[in-house]
Length: 609
Image (cartoon, rainbow, N blue to C red; front, side, top):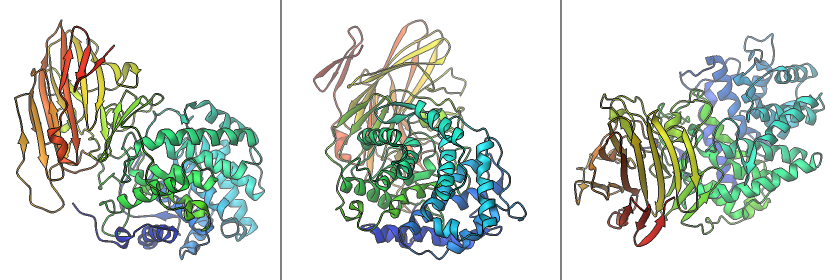
């Protein structure tokens, strides 16, 4: 699998003009795909939970996350007239291309945010240039959101942005709605800069509430000083947490939903720059964004015409959420908010800097995460989260033991047949009938600086206590299992790409020192798993294709074992992966004393309580 050769893949992304070029290079393929009076973007057929007509509108509106800042930054764009016509037609009830009335829990509410920001940034072109009648129609259509009910989550910020727009253009603001929505957002705040609504702390967090709070700050910092001061303090705290997800070369640990929004994950830093808040040194913020964009634009995320696809590192509907339409990936354009900054802003004039020195191990108490960092990768050891909102593949996206920036994770397509589960980074249990269960919700979670402890129940009569302990590019898992039934177990390490680009396949190099360990080694990396107690048998499996979000076909090292009912069972595992095959011979020596709960890793003793 390779990326098509487009100009954007050769863009060095060194300065403001390069960033502008990258946006225009993604906008150009869209120009012949506007339909229905320029009110929709039709890039290919595909459906979601809302009607296809709204899906067309979604694609159209999401381009505005980039177009609005582009124009506000002083750049010209040839498609402006297309958007001016589309906004007029889409909000005109007499037009055959009307976007339709807004209902409760409507996707149209989501897409109002990009329109609101674009108009606020470009009042002359996208408001003043319209006739009074057109302005009235735009206002009336957007104002429908003030009479609708919708999700009690970050969606409230969409209505906040609409009312901010009304304030900016001198139209009536629904003050009651605005204050109630802001109060609800305030209730989501936890600590250390983190908010939580119905979904756990995930990739979506930084480009949701934190992102919108910076837009609010920009337009209202002089009018709502106390609230904006809190927003400023929180993003400064959050940046010190969020930076641990990032690798030295620009990748981000994929975790949770909405992964198809790809480089939106660094839009948090763009929004902070837009608000004028230096959450990290300007050069560090700049480097985080530019390295991330460089990495993405060299991956096969575009179709043959240069359109963004649904997927993650490659086009892949398995990873998609039920709310992803063909135009959904353009939510990633949020990162281009930095283009609204003038060329002489310190964000642009600062020299790009590397990440500051970060600790090899970092525990984030609020999201219940331990990060294990090496030069080549960052691994997220997951203490246990689960969303209230049951989205596609929720257990895979939120409840696996480990997530890697370089090796990602896999989603299942079935719980029947082990190869269909994705197989990686989880202890799977089954009764022998072909069905497999994995961790979902945790009964309890305990965190400390050195390890996490979770208790979970795959069956009502089966309890598993899992410890996760970082050890460089490896980590240790200890499972203490009690069950009232006999069970089979399979435990997977990280998935390792089976193939490289269009090259012919290489022989599988599976190294073992004993029946209880296996190391898969290719020139591009290795993946290892072992049971130090020798109780389980090691092998490897090729899961069904297109389940892993980083590689379309992978091999996964696996341990197979048994659980005997009515007794305490111990499963001990050392596993890890790295692009650096030099680590393959540096596996930590591990011993666990069941009686005392003392774990010894390379001579270091750790008491697991």
